[in-house]
Amino acid sequence: MGLKVGNPLQAQLQHDRASEYVNCITWELSQAYQQENPFTLVCCLLPSADKSRYDAIKKVTCCGHHPVPSQCITSKKLAPNARLMSIVTKIAMQINVKMGGELWRHPAQSAFDSTMTIGLDVFHQRGQSSVGAFVASLNKTNSRYFSRAMIHEQRQENMDQLESPTADALRAYWNQTRSYPKNIVVFRDGVGDGQLAYVRDNECDQIIRGIERIVPEGQTVGVCFVVVQKRINHRFYRTRGRYKENPLPGTVIDDVVTREKWYDFFLCSQSVNQGTVTPTHYNIIFDTWKGANNTELTPNQIQSHTYLQTHNYYNWPGTIRVPAQCQYAHKLAYLVGEHTIHLPNPHLDNRLYYL
Image (cartoon, rainbow, N blue to C red; front, side, top):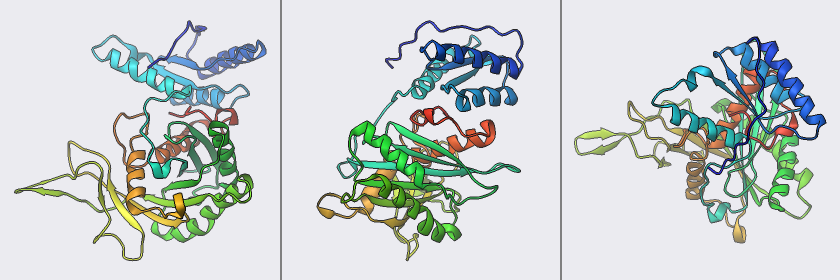
């Protein structure tokens, strides 16, 4: 993978209490910061999977004054066995991603050569505030990302703080490519049919206002807003002689069973060995896309782009049910809502530290 690992600074603890880890990490990070030689990663070997200890480590490394990506590994996983090399390789891959590496990438389609892809999701924790997450790609191969979490009211599904993250993501895109995207594709996860009108009238408008804050006057940026729905009852199969089989990965259904007044399609992006594959429903509720020569975004193009994004999730070597940006947004919202409770330090915005 081209990942060079030097000799780390090792710290041995006398107890496995959460406070012991926090005090040690805080001290070492502050000392390194004062010496202007900050760490690039904190790796913690844990005796067991204890939630309070994990929460404390993630909180101090993600939300502290000296933020740094962190990797927690239980000693049980490193016990000698036949799968040890596979386990260590996956850990190295995660560390590589958290430090800004790119495990794989796909060639960009010509229609999406200068396109930012955004994923949005909200995590709900009973008795606590909901957490929204915004994840945006920063290059044409969708292999680098900008991430931002937002605290919402309890059980609030609608997102009302998208203008500022959109503007910051566009600045990060400029720093990466020295240009602004010509178009933006937004995948919004976790929205029911009854919320489509609100999302179209409010969340789309917030993103457009964020674009207008940053993009120079006279340059237009098209927006294609897609609602992603996983909790559906539809199932599809193909017939081979007398047998019924799951459809092949990449199968798109955009006629007959789709809704008459919607611009929607179903995508089966995964291959399963047991049971029936569950498709994902995509509904384009807003589209101002303008490509070369003012061409509109065709159904085939958005379907192909959506399927390609299901390959881009670095925690799994195959395809997933939703575009990678949605899964990244879910992971970020889950980390904040379930473990850190506080918003991560903005210095980590350009890292996939939440994998």
